[in-house]
Length: 325
Ligand code: PBG
Image (tube, rainbow, N blue to C red; front, side, top):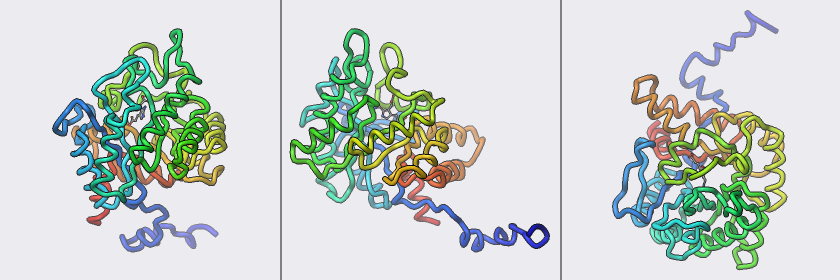
């Protein structure tokens, strides 16, 4: 059957009709809100590259986490900026490390808030790479040992979920083994399984002071040109014990999200990264578009592609907008 019998505009006539047939709805429960915690400050500090986003000391981070939880967002993802960096990122293993202190403060304010701790070395190493350097190269097997110890340390502090973002091979298995050996069988793993070597991380590296001091991350993060490889990476991580798998960035990789959703039966997370966020902010500041409409359209596309969980710096704003509408 075709026109004039078929008239798709019949169902687009009014707001109520459009709502009735809408296939994708954002909800505050879809989101995770990233929070930067810093050992270098006593007061929240604005991040120049990410308008409206701050670095927090632990107590203030807990207040921010509680504020977003009350908006309906189930959890936060913590990134730590330590007071000291060294070759092996040893600060990240200490119980008085910045992330460990922040986890305890958040759980103290409200134990219901899901606390996810990003597991990586780039914020803690003086060279800014995500692993241990050996003869000028990132040494995979030496790195996964340290990453597993870091994940266990976050679990001791009370993290519900650990999220390895380093892209070393075998790190999910190393982390699962270390957690289980130490009695943390209920600490979940959300793996950054398909993490691309992306130019969209620029603002984050400024926020976390984690830019590599030599070379780049192409020997461990994925080539943006590859799709089949993402499916293999996700498959490995599920076999190794990942409870949730992530695709990152989100907007330029909607095809990967969609393929992963069709293929795998675990929750799929997508990371709406710093560059995606700041582009919208700066476009809105330059009056090239409306921030709310741009953000909701992008986030809806990520959910429509198949993401069950969206990590976004826009999460708190969106939850506010959704609660109003
Ligand atoms: C690495 C890490 C990065 C991001 C999350 N974890 C940066 C990188 O790989 O250089 C980027 C997040 C964002 O851009 O919002 N620990």
